[in-house]
Amino acid sequence: MPDPFPVPPPRRIYPPEGKDFLSVLRVDATGPPGPGGESKSYLVSYDVPGEGETAFRTIAFQDGPVPEVGVTGLTNEVLLAAVEDRLAAFQAGPYACPENGFALGAVRNALTFLHSRTCDRQRRGVEGAYKT
Image (cartoon, rainbow, N blue to C red; front, side, top):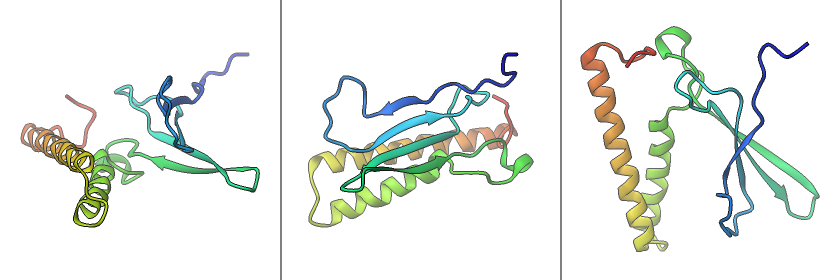
């Protein structure tokens, strides 16, 4: 009998296919997509040097409207705020470089646009609901 709730196989999102990155980290989107087509969880894996084992970390995003289900995971804004903090620290320290500066600006722009979206949704009374 077929599974009534099939879970799609993991989808590799990092490193990008065809790119020659030196990163030892791998990121897979896991689980079924949400109502907007988004992934709710990601599995980060890497080989532990000298141990012949693979370590795993999970990134879990909010699954459902907070007013209905409570906090179940991170939001895009929270994850971007952490990246903003790291990049700002690099820029204020010995690792400052043009690339980090451009990335920091892009993250700050992303946060600005997401905040604008939230304000618009609040104004329209649809924030915290699966409504457009």
